[in-house]
Image (cartoon, rainbow, N blue to C red):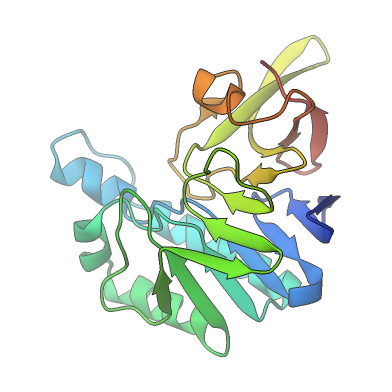
Length: 220
């Protein structure tokens, strides 16, 4: 699988070009901020109409990552749905598709700030998941170590062939990794935003997602 190999708290991990995190020794795939149902939520709140294919596209990419990795455990790091009503409004076809992806796997939903927990879906709901020596949670905690989190939808830019390319990005230092948003229609927060700059150490890297994962010093 295309990705960037790194170590966190002595654990070998791979940041995949899709925005998923792979822990080979545990056969664990971690994704963050799916925001399923975002187009439905925007339309429901009178914010305009987007093509209603975001959930399908996100699940299609997740299915491909699961097929490639053969993951036995999946951890969704919070904000899996854009809100609770979006979870309740999930079309039956997509609900069945999600159930098929869950079949035969341990599936953990971490509560996010948009969704305290999926409604009526299989899997285990937790506020955070310790898998020593790592901890999986939605929002990073200052001072934590061995931490895997999401929430911020980080993105970073790189100059390539005279143009600036901006992509969703993992942020990585010796204490933590912050995952990019996995979902379609999710925006991003630039890595030089003060909320991220104060969390990450000076030597932090940004791992830009895409066909190839590019590691650069985290722009500040």
